[in-house]
View 1 (cartoon, rainbow, N blue to C red):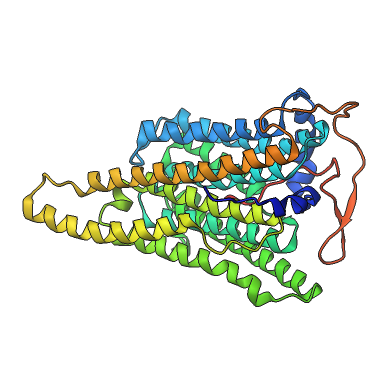
View 2 (view 1 turned 135 degrees about the vertical axis):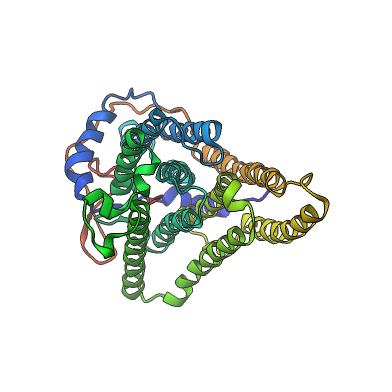
Length: 429
């Protein structure tokens, strides 16, 4: 077993303090008052990580229902789309109050951040699988591009947090506006069906403009890509400013982006090279890539809180490369055999078994990493993961006055210790 946390890392782990800033106006004026009300309804004996896990399981249930009802992206009953929207909103709500609950119970720490962002990383894939199904484009190359755009947004945000030591969420971000938009999209699909998104903008508006003669799903996917690009640019600017202020090497920091770009390019090549992957087997393919992505993000966050060097590569990236090259090679040979010996050899079925096998392998590798980190941190801090081992005495609910800290640009920011700041999320969408 890989030793992800060494004894020499313990000192840095115990000194770690979480820092974030969220510029979203919707979060500030609408959602945060709701979250403050909601967390006060949670008993003080409930552990923050249990809240996080509960929200995450709602999304696992959503994807599970998709696999049961429409394993090849078939249209599912309308009520199921609506339930996905409700589950996603529940996830957002519980994901937002776990940090508040941690402060109420005096159980804040590195484990909470790792557990929280680990669930966020995996949920990015789960949420987008549901959204792509609702748009009716699950078995298209456009869906591959869209989900990679979302994962890139999350990855760059993690990269930014590692180098600036602060999680920045801009005025429009995935955890707030992105999730709310997805909830509305899923609900609309529940009443109209995925075919609603196949109509052109002209048909929706009743116009005859040549520039608007494209499907609504193209508009949605383009909006997702633009939002992702906007957040990537903002994250990059924050890293550049931090680097200038601290006289550090920007070139060295930029190297952390290259492996992800390479991986995305390889995934797109893999999906295009297969004759049946996009048409028949994208759901297990996305789950496989999602676990590999979640593992890399988990390593970035772990190395951030432990003040270790940036993890440019990991063994699950090796799995993607080996599996991809093997599948592309074998798939080509298999097609030739199928053409020669007839229908007895089904390429899609063969590939489906391979994909679900890769899902199982990547899941086990991810869980090995996650369970190691959880058990190690629980031992270091003498805590439990899903229960409160040492209840805090004289607990207040949500304090009233904010606590301030100084950001990378010298401006005053609300500190993570402030009760007015929840342990907010990076974009998963």
